[in-house]
Length: 373
Image (cartoon, rainbow, N blue to C red; front, side):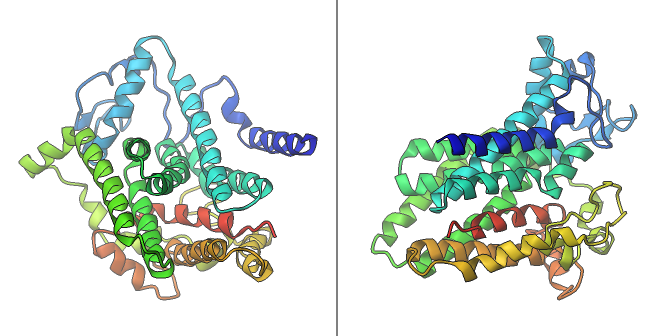
């Protein structure tokens, strides 16, 4: 017991050491994180707006593409109206999201039958890898919070299916709603992950209760879809009626792929964000040998797998290894090898989201490949 406490305290110290600058009582600013004063916060206590005058250095900016963030903006304005500062709010939200992210990964790993130490290491790795650190450093807090909510959301999805309790389905729906109001693009990754899990489940798990499982899946999906539609009805309805609210034209340009595909196959294998650590757009850091241990841990783990372990546990490990291989391929974008596949996914419209969020997938890989042999 004393040893466990010492290990837990060590991880807490490492996390605090990583994020200590964010815990200081001073404003944090970045390219995508601007200081907002009391009047700026109070001005967000309005109905959803397609144009914000405060952005773009006071010239104003079209917010049509991010109307789904209105609940968060309104909530910030509500808290600002009672005297809470913007600096305190973003620090509070980030600390809460980091905590939720760690708990989510910890529960997922424990649910896979791994030891507490493996769960502690996995949670730590998820919240301190180069991707999340650069998101926070660059001020992309909405994406960062959505990323941190993803593990717990997937865990709750699995729990809702297993327990077959409506209350658990609503919990899953609530977490999905939280993701959508911070960054709706993360839901695409959640859907891809759930789809892969469904295919894997029905192909490799022979069960007599297939009809019951389909009913559970339909129930969870229906509750979530209806809840999401009602929450986002305020912008879905005018979009459908007016048909004049469009995303920026640059979102559909395939030429962005060659311009923005900074990550190579080496970056995706090493889990090394290409702009690490200076975080200067377009300035790619050479591959660092110190990061080679990541693919070694991921792909060597199955070789060390104990034959005495349960078959179901082995299947879970193989599933996450397959997810890792898919993720490694998506992260590299339009770069070789098979450089034509990613542009095809982009032009198919449904997969445009992968352009900006491909790195998130790989964060799960090492967590599940890490075995307590």
